[in-house]
Structure formats: C-alpha cells, structure tokens
Length: 111
Image 1 (cartoon, rainbow, N blue to C red):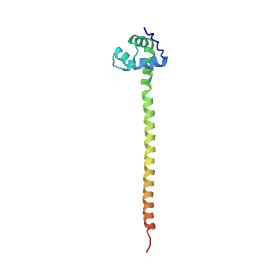
Image 2: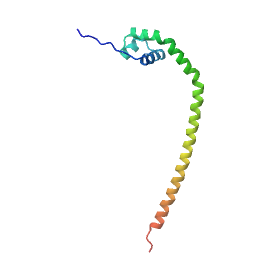
Image 3: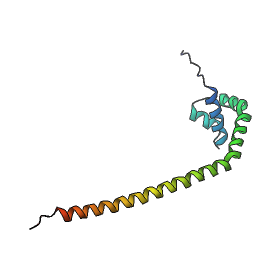
Image 4: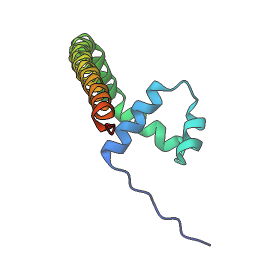
C-alpha cells in the first residue's frame, strides 16, 4: 500500500482559491476536480476565509470608480502620445519622400 503525502498550501493560495470559488458558478465538486483538491478541504477553506475574501471583494468594488477615472486618464494620455507619434511619423515620411526625390534628381548623370 502506497503512502500518500499531504499537500501543504500557502495561506495566499487558499485565499485565492476561495475567491475563485466565490466568483464561479460551478459546483464545489466541479471545482475540486478542476483543482485536484478534495471538496471537503475546499469547503473548510471557504468556511475559514469567506468573510475576509468577501470584504476584500467589496472593497475592490467600492474602489472601482476611482480606478476607472485613473484608467480613463491614462488612456487619454496614451492617446495624446500616440497622436504626437503619428504626427512625427507623418513629418518624417514627408522628409524621406523629399530626400528620395532630391537623390533621384541630383543622382542623374548630366550629358
């Protein structure tokens, strides 16, 4: 008979797993099979960490409007930088076209 070794999981792993359980619409046996951890162990973790994780999730939801404003500001800044890069690119393309024409004109042999 083989001796089974016990898996040891970190607190962080357990909390992330409980958060995953709370976010899913799957049943506990489905999640247990997916993670290869017994449903009983998952139920224990859920009991232990549920209130803590739900409080964290609620805080994340409340912080959302501030996060959205911050991300919108970053998006505006990135769009402005992109517009500047596109304008610079257009200028450089025009300069390149002029130089090609000048090279063509001055590169011809004179008779």
